[in-house]
Image (tube, rainbow, N blue to C red):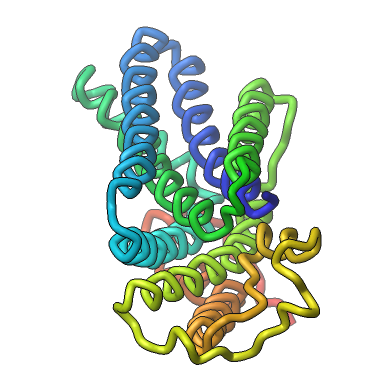
Length: 290
């Protein structure tokens, strides 16, 4: 449940911050007439994301077992890829998100109502579709037959909306760089479990061999139906009897991804990025540090 809460919180807060920045900019620049197109774009994006999630859930129920496993495994791998890209992108752009959105909004204001709707739709819609896909994959991987995964996602989204409202009202100051760094790292751990479970689905669909080759089996030590087994399953997608392929995939993803994510230089942190002449001229020079 915690992993799903984290997904809802982090992804929801990204969308909430985008909405807050767009609306606050229009209000401060006395362009309240442009708020209606912005809200239209936001509502359309949310509805499409919800429809996409429903299509994934109810569409898969009409399939055979092997088809369900093949779809679940394929979409889990796709979801991990999208979320990994999103985590690194947000790590780089968190400090400059407001300026980037303001620039897009200025261009949209000059182009008219349709451009405003499109700007809001694209800004929120991308987050919504990524969230729907990753939430579906995570719930599919961690589901224990109870509504707890969905409750966790709902609580995370509700918390994100509340924090976004506080952010808009000026009652909350968030260090976006630190927030997205640490939640991003935790999300990478969750993604590693989803990826391993996705390959297990492909094994059950007979798309990938090795279903009977277990790396270990500690079901007697950590029973899947125990409270701690359920907790590990819900948080880390832990499985007491993983296949060799699952462990291999988990390690090959988690170790290099976290190492790159916490790298002090490079695209993981945004340092070392080549600046344009305008950016170089606008920043004060700093004396070299010992």
